[in-house]
Length: 94
Image: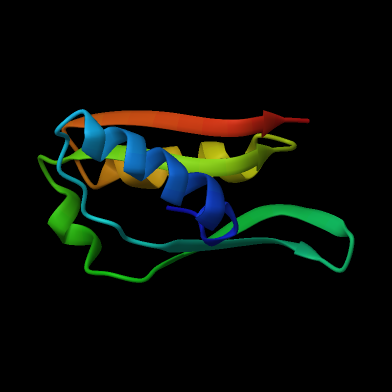
C-alpha cells in the first residue's frame, strides 16, 4: 500500500474482508518530488522484505494518480519481484 492511501485502503480492506478475502497489509513509500516539481525518477522504499512477494497476489492501493510515472515504476519493481498476480485500485485519477 502506498502510504498516502491509508484511509482509502482501510475502507477497501473492510469491504474485501466482508467478501472473505484475507489481507496482509504492507507499506511502500515512493519519492519522486522535490518541492512541487517531479524529478521524473521515483525512488521506492519497501517497508518489508520484498522477496516475500514472490508468488503472491498483490493489490496496490493508491489515492490519486497524477503523472503515472510513480505507479509505473512501482509496478515494474513489483513485476521484477515475481509476484503472481498484480492489480491496482485507485481512488482518483488526475
